[in-house]
Image 1 (cartoon, one colour):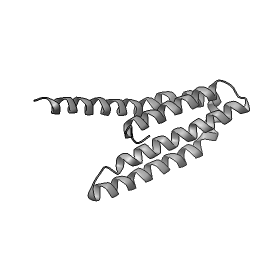
Image 2 (tube, rainbow, N blue to C red):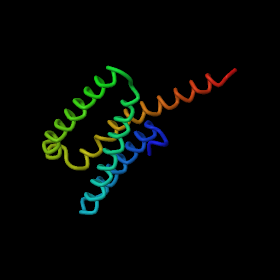
Image 3 (cartoon, rainbow, N blue to C red):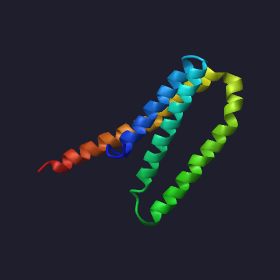
Image 4 (spheres, helix red, strand yellow):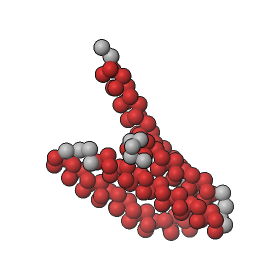
Length: 129
């Protein structure tokens, strides 16, 4: 996974997360929940590991500070999501709760694609004589 790079890893995680949403909204059978949870777990791990790997590219004090801030943000979001999910599920329902994730997932996908395109452009400009 990391041989392809950090940003493709993030995109893979987003793709897995979208797949989890699609499995979740396709039905309420046990197999939907099982498949959705497996895809969600894979997506979470791929994106988390990719983002953490991205932070290791920093150097010096910025590296430690960025990793600390990242951990606080990640686990604050996990705690907030875990607290709100039951309430949201009851208020808007299972299908809507999953569909709400789709626009949220566009942000990391767009940022990763923009960075990939920017890096490719910079490499092409650097290769010019």
